[in-house]
Image: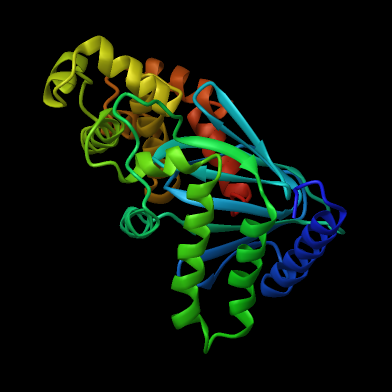
Length: 310
């Protein structure tokens, strides 16, 4: 049926309502829950402040409410009519922008496994992305009826746990197949590509994460990836929305925040542990990212629990 067919719109509305009701039963209070192995659901009853974390490759759907995700200089907003996928591990900030006690934000997250995507691609006859093709690691697309229906069937399994071990892998593969058919197909093919610039960017991210507390030497890193300095810089920014230095800085600051909050380090020690040799420089960068100096930010976090979000 055409996308604008009244019957299609009626069915989509019914599926969206069913998703709201089912997720609402799965998680009746604010927080996060693993509804099935690998399937997380979330509930928030009011708009939230920005929440910083490292996002892993995942397919994200909102049943009710809306959310914004900030990755570098890019901003993505999605809602029950759109889905979001992430295909690289990137530091990002997100916040719920539409939620009330009467109509809470309800969402789900399904990890994207490159091996499963690769297997579905082979079965469906999809080729890897072309060398040189660029795509952002994050994007939002309309949630069409076939994909929405598959998501609803996945969530239904929560109330049929005896069926989940057999049917969840099948429905997950169907969801991946639908994603490959849609606007995000090229992005998913990048995730499993064995050669090309996107694979090099995934490798670059792994290297920067492993050495985040050391000085970032762009020429050496580019050489290690078999690229020129300018090509590495351009492809990294195209994929992540930020420069390599900006990416490393966010990793450092998020780890420093964790060290202060979870391990009780003071700001000077935390800054030194993540690679800062100047306490004032660390404090300036920290305030720029988290909108408060280290001590005040950590005190604020200790007074309230960070919202559980995907």
